Image (cartoon, helix red, strand yellow):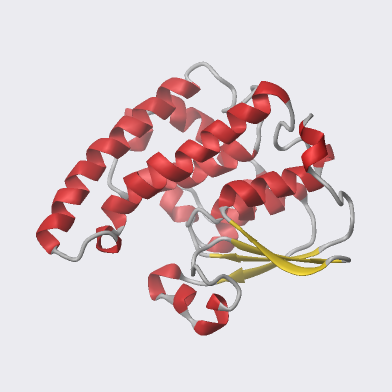
Length: 235
């Protein structure tokens, strides 16, 4: 059933990935490394407002990452949003088996990625890391951070419980969902949680993901290996 939603498979496409170190775009960066296809990485630093520059806004007027520029026999176009890009890549390279493309496993993958991108990201981590994006008043920002910490911890407890006894997030095989979980593991560390000790099931799955060469290549290329407590360039 799901196979019908994908088209133009195996048509040679040139791809350029706009990403920022450690942002949610890391999941797409990992995905491209896992696939092993040729692509052009285009790094910009969100924390230095490089995503607000006119040349990038011409690519993605929303000024967010990731953005995947695709050029093939249909011309050039831009695809945004992590869930959309990961689903597109899985459909273009189904032989890689990096995302279930049918049945309940496909639905579970979308369930994971939708929840991570909304409840855990937009109304969770962002309220702690960048509350100024929601309100200007500093007192309100601190209240938002406090509420965000409670929401994020509840989300990580949820993830830890979902992963208990599982090899990977979906269908007990590595998928793009696990590459996205790598992002959220880093963000848990970034907001000051003791993720390794407080969420051992989550940590167990991420340790397995970090042992994958493609995951390590993406992390090394973004210069964030130390944030995971691992040495750069060592697999």
